[in-house]
Image (cartoon, rainbow, N blue to C red; front, side, top):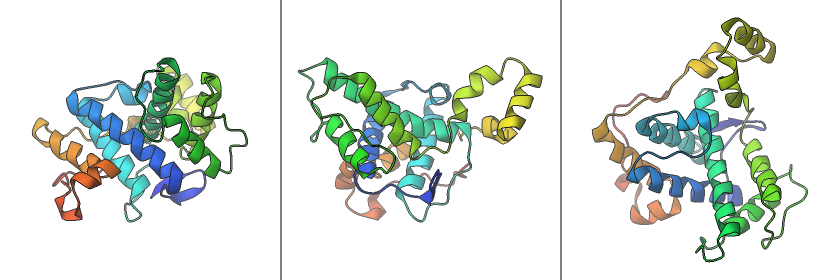
Length: 223
């Protein structure tokens, strides 16, 4: 489960399909080396921390028996990165007519997820090339999962400790929200996290048909 604006829940239906598609591609990128996804609090992490954070957040959003992680900047930033990657893929579709999209296309996946949302009234047509419209819809989908966007304030709050504490108190942000950092697995454990993350996606489940075949990182305390 993950703590969202609508309480603890997992992703289902088209919302889940969109998240899983983005997660799978992010894991592919991180399998080859470090990569940045456009959300600073996530991009600032080491490669192993990114894999761990994705694993922890993805299990919470996809597995009903997974305990909800603590509300932290890096957890929320990890979720935001998955949705930011969705938008990046939509932009790639719009900019490059020769780009071979997933089937269905990323825009189709966004539309189907948006159609299931109670918070989105207007959805672009699949042929729309208006990037601003697509960004608004993807951000709305992210906001169906994110409790807030306080993780975006971290860079501004670091400058003046006194002012930072005042703003955090006013906004009800705990010290642990920014101070918490994800576990950084050893180099020899990275492939275990990669395999476990792939096992959370449809393609990965095809590669690992049984639950016992999905690698689970052993002995690491979550959060």
